Length: 175
View (cartoon, rainbow, N blue to C red):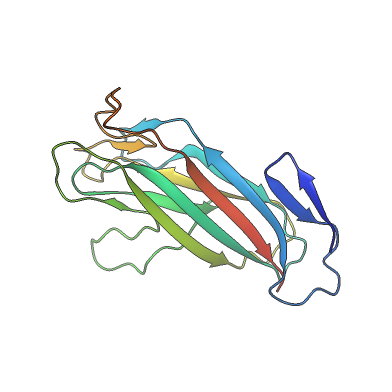
């Protein structure tokens, strides 16, 4: 199988004809290296996304996310979207939040960063371009902002508060 490198971030299979199920056909990665502070409880795009055009409607897309940030002292919501559809979400259970990428930290004095990760094997059943993205919001009760790729205090010292980079990686797998 011949591979072509595109824009230093994606590999695309030249042909998928006759390849066995489970073969990796292409890999695409989106990167968010800047920071965000979210104060609204409404979900919003944070600039972490990637587009992929499946070569077959039977392909599956393995979506892997590594999202760094800080949630305040309780749960801060982040969600994984295929277009306008949330994916990788837990079944609804009363008033409990059900999202694929929650930040959840115990109370602490410094507001350190943590990582939320998820892998979802999606079956989009299309050969049209798909956008996968992460959306975030402040804590549901509006009392705590959410911070992406930074800590709450974001101190400019050598010992505390690193800045980070978040990733979304899409892997097309032959069905």
